[in-house]
Length: 106
Image (cartoon, rainbow, N blue to C red; front, top):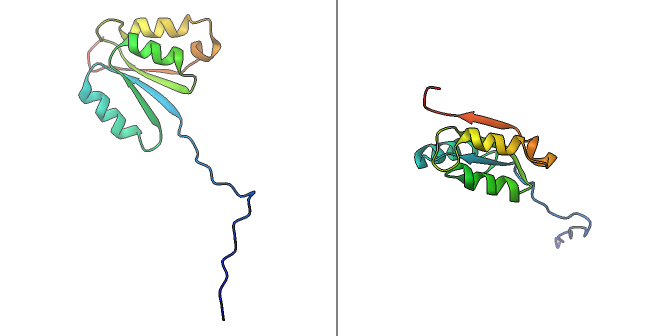
């Protein structure tokens, strides 16, 4: 008795489901790593260490779906980044959800 292996039909293609992409803008390496650890199972996590770099990523990467930003950072702070996002002429950008994270009293 011989066994045969059925070939997979050509129409059954394998594919990967892309995780939602989020951006974490935080100048503290320790905080960025902690946030990445917490979220990386469910999300593709991009990182930026200041608002300028964060803005470049938001502007250039259409797959970013949510931005987490610290408020107090060098160069462009979180308030300035939020303003840049909200004042963008591009609907993809100005409608992005932004979550403010900070360890300092306001």
